[in-house]
Structures are given as C-alpha cells and as structure tokens.
Image (cartoon, rainbow, N blue to C red; front, side, top):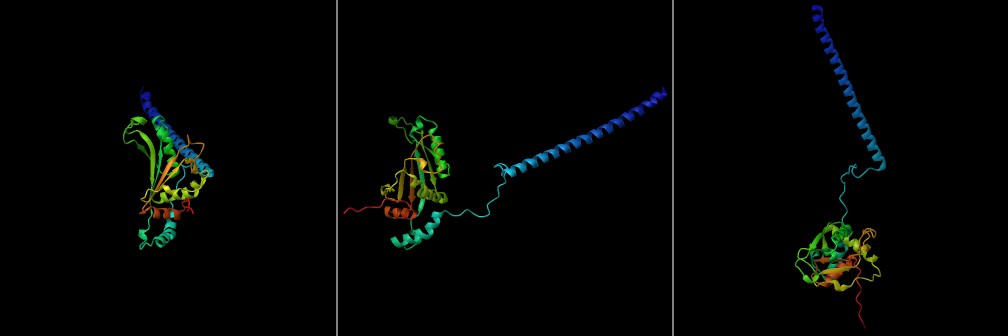
Length: 256
C-alpha cells in the first residue's frame, strides 16, 4: 500500500509533465499554424496587388498622387486679358482696363412641365444638366398656385444651374466652339436675345448638341435656356464683348 501511495504522486507528476509538454507542443503547433496562415494571407495579398498592378489597377486600389502643378487657366480667360481688353479699350475709349465689361455668370435652365405627371422627368433633366455643366443643379419649384395649369405652390417645375469662375469660361468655350456648330442648319445667333442691361439669352431646342450627352441614354429630347450675364452697361458693349469671345452672331444687313 505504501508503495502504491508513494507511486501515485510520481505518476501524477509524470502526467502533469506530459500534459505540459503536450500543451507546449500544441501551442508551438498553433503558433506555427497562425504564422503559416499569416504568411499565406500576406502572400495572397501580394499576389492580388501584383495582379491589380499588372491590369493597370482598379479605382479603389490605386493610390492617387497629389498634382504637382496647378491646372492651367481657362483659354478664354487668357484671351480676355491678352486680346479682348486692348480691343475694347481702343474701340470704346476706356481710360482704365477695369472699365472693360466682363462675364459675370452663366445660368442654364430646363423647364420640365411634365414633372406634374411624370415623377422621373426632373431626375432626367437634372442628370442632363449635370453632364453638360459638370455641376449639380438645383430643382426649381412653383412660387404660386395656378389652377388653369393644375399647378400648386411648391411643385417642382424645372432645374437650373449657375456657373461662375473657371467653370463658366470652360462652358462658354465648349458652347461656342463645339455645341453651337452641331445645331442643324445653324446660320448664326440672333441679336434680339439682349435685354438692354448687358445680358444675352439663347434658346436651345435639343440638349444633344452637347457632345457630353449620350443619345442612347436620354429619355427624350429636351430644350434648355442659356443666359450669359455680363457687366456691360448697354447692349452694344455686350454684343461686342461676346463677339470677341467668338459668339457667331448674324451680321446686321442694311437695306438699300
């Protein structure tokens, strides 16, 4: 009995040592497995990045670098400072270059009367203006109720956007040199669009004259209104300013 009792602690010690060794081995195995999994994950991540780099990279995986140089100024703004100001000062006898009228803003507006019956018309018109101008337009609402048109105050009836600064000059450049020549049977712009305070308005029947609009993605043909606001004091100065920017006006003809 004593031998058995004296042998039990030894067995227990041996079993504890065996369990400790097994635990250590298991821990080492688990650590090795974890290290192996991490290595596999790193390897798979490296392979995925290499494949993305080989394909040219995705938009979400690319690291965009900050531009080292500022964007160039609009071409029409440089033309205004170098050519238009000297010509206007010589023709109108301005004593100061700051007296020369300049562009103030350009407003584009699409009236959507069908929005009362078609809820998606406003979304389509907003999308078209966004593509044309590169700026998010605002939705215009009715200011008062008109029973004859089944119109209530607050109903969305159109969308509009106001362009200023470099974006205004870029749009005018595209309008004059790209969009207007695409109008069917275009023979020039009429001079009656002036309001007497130096602002000129153009009515465009089809938005597809802008090359940014994809004909296959629009729901219908829509017209829009373009208003060019200048700081000119009268219509003569405004017309001459827009002519120097390249606006193709119809020449005045004098009858004999």
